Length: 425
Image 1 (cartoon, one colour):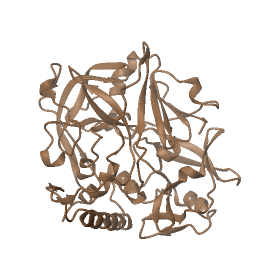
Image 2 (image 1 turned 90 degrees about the horizontal axis):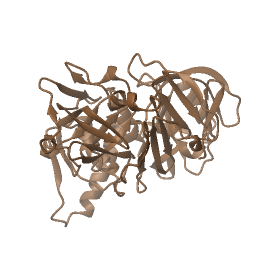
Image 3 (image 1 turned 120 degrees about the vertical axis):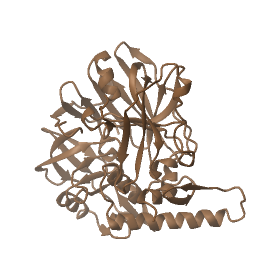
Image 4 (image 1 turned 30 degrees about the horizontal axis):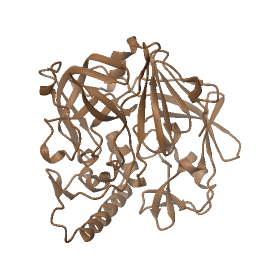
């Protein structure tokens, strides 16, 4: 029986970013400070169950049965649509994998923000996702199994004069369906924006989980969490940021993600023009390797603010916002006709319904997520899938892109804190 990840192949083809590849990294601003673009796919069509399933899998959690069933139905529908549209097309292809086979379908779902990263000498440019929810820099490479590559740019260490194979080291990332990505470890020159790390661990994939294969413009991840959760064994490796931070003017970076638009990451400085409110900081707890922090409460629409601690992970690699049932229930009780739908594996509502904003606390300050951010994706008919869903099955709360796009977010490694500031939306 194919793994759950293989069911994602047809759907995650949707996240292949049919738009043009990201532009070259921005100019070096000054010594110790630089800006890096993140490019949004302007042709994206989102799918809620896919985004939710990918979050479960990322954190090695079992995907709930209703979400898995929703994904399987979607995959079957897209497969049928593709076969119908290509029944007389002799050149269409399918990708055979050890976990089963799946037909490539047109880009139709999901979303990613990608950033150009240069690896090796001479530099090889790969578009990677900057991910505050992981700590590995792993890439598709010429070592990746041929049937698991689908147009991604590949890192070829043999073509880099500065690549050094780290004998005896290996890495493996296991996902919630028990599929995995794994491979060898090299050390090479890595440049992001205006900053170069001379001897950065680069994890080359020999095997790639099915969920990544059809993400054709994404060649891997650059983790920005903490070294503790790096997956290289027997000796863990430092993240790019940890290696680079001593060269920065300040040991921090900021995420300025945008709603349906390009954004940027700044390293080593805070752009005063990127926010219009004060930055309020909250301490982080990095003992588990993540950007864990605690929000001070929430409000739904114009209702009173409820003071309650909401511990969570700030994760640029997750699309949705996952919160406790009590909070999710409070939000959707304010939405006419909203309901939990077993066939979608989440809360849905009429797309024409007026949604309330959602506000969360940072210390004594508040950040408001506009209602339009929470109208995440079409579900079925004229119903939409909510960007706010329950965290009860995954076991912890996640402030993903739904929340992160609502503010300038400061990941202050040097002072063990995270900052949030209102910005123009």
